Image (cartoon, rainbow, N blue to C red; front, side, top):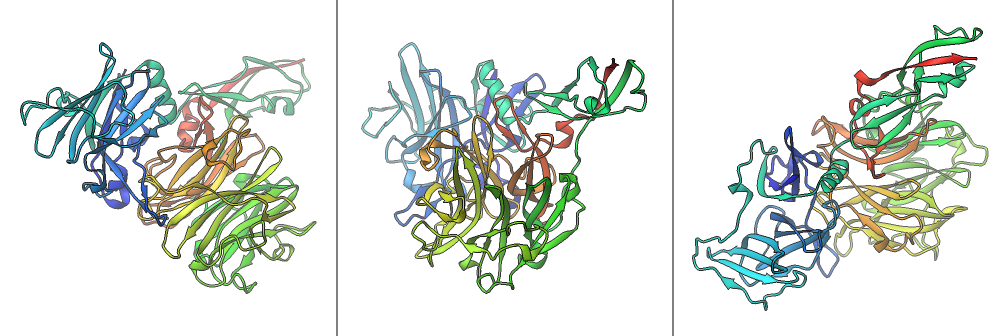
Length: 601
């Protein structure tokens, strides 16, 4: 199969800015034409560089060139540029170099140093007959150069290079613009086309194309004796990537006489809860928790400028949409919480319910993480049954972060008997470093106390994470049998807000950053679901059927208010979470009705 490598022309800043457009995009050639991957969004971004004071310099890339490596893996070279598309003077004479085993995850290698002049139109190919790489490029004076090497790693200006004869002779510098390509993706600036195997193509489809429901299977015949036994018969929903999930069926039982043995033809409809976006207007940072058989919804309240926290209770997740809300905390009850109340989350730790949230006595610059516990035997819907929020402290008892900056968006999860918290922390003094993610262990009996030192987990180093501002925040864990997934939100809280993803093996030491893998692209963005801009700050809950649901906020329109949405989390054929599967893709309406033969003995 063929794979197109390209960048895009930037659109309006709020829609698809230069920081997003100047990244490597991929599209597959199919029988229907060229199909862009990842919603025609970037898949590979350049990392930011870091100054001695910890601040970051955002970087982008242009003219990416995708090529096969000698060992059967893949390489990418590209020009590093400033986010606005201008030349990066610190990368003059240098090229970005990435390696990848699967075209999904990429490792950014040290820069290739080719000289002292601005490099343009660089390409690379592997020549199996000589077991050497051929690297060619142009410089600003129009001359073309050639370099051959057995190993691309660590190329420096000391390598011997050959100047091609003519200033206008590009040698074999073939670009995709010289290839006849019909129906390019929207805004595409084509670069080159690579032949890939069917296996590699299938993995790209599984990761970067949203699966769609293709069949719903039930047994041809079931032997049951009661309505409850029939209700237990589920459908196996199959998807285009080879994944599947069991779903409840709403069976039509009117034609069955349960007192009369025999065979009955029965139809049913695969059950699907419907959540029209938004489910709650002006509610940001939503979180749904389950406690003693009830479901609870909590969020940041944008209606009163984040000065109160309300909670809803229902017997089911759909019931929360219309449930009444009750205020359990405001910015006036306690003197140490006199202003902004942000991002409340419900967590059950050793059978006790807590609300993790951020609060400040005065201005934004004093925002800090707090934990509020439900009193023993308390009712979550009564404000008086919640204890006073406690500020999170380090293991020596000092404040989590002092006067130099703020902490917020703390989340909690348990793995292997250890209890972890992850939060966003932003240094403002002496310089603003942007918001970074940290992780530590806590005392489950007093979850506002760390028992390990904070460890830096993630910085907003990619263009999608520092769009309009340098921010990583809103972490939340999604734990499966094989992996720990940690989603987080990045960029400004506007139409450019996105959801990123890190993952780790549950048996690994989670306090070591090298044991986490961060995806180079956002998992959820404004391009993921039509009409939902700036999706982010999400949380997960498992319903009574064992299905995982994502609660998130987005904007209904570029400048719409932050409002809450709910969507099912699907796991693709490789067990990777899918957050952009709409209801119509999750359950095709024309496939929703199923039938079986009921045998009553």
